[in-house]
Image (cartoon, rainbow, N blue to C red):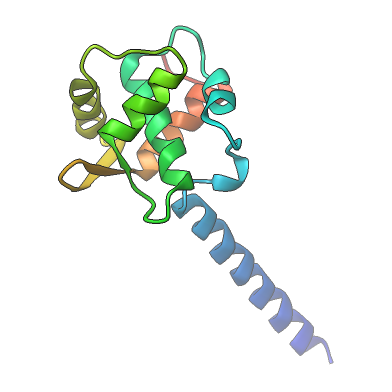
Amino acid sequence: DPEPKVHNKEKDGAEAKTAKAASVHKGNSNSIPETFGEYYHDMPKKSKEADKILLAGHFIQSKSDDNLFSTREASAALLEQGVKLSNSAVFIGQNEKAKHIIKISKGKFRVSKTGLEHIEELLTGQTEK
């Protein structure tokens, strides 16, 4: 009876899609190294400050229970890598304007789908500039 097999395949496909969507929503935490240093190391040397804080925010978000990050947490992660940003809030603002992050509440942000795509482009070297 071939019908149940097809039905099972469709069900499995839907479950796989749901799992994939969940991992993207959570910020692809499977592909993110355990430490921010490893993650930051994959970034091109000539990256902009706004991109650096976006990457830091994404890392923190992927490891947090509420799937959010704060400007302070992102700045602290960069500082551990020896990167001192002149004004973190300005770079957060640039990311917000570019729709790379979404403000959830005062001082709390989430990387958007556009932001995730931008990070992917940065890390794979497929940038439009």
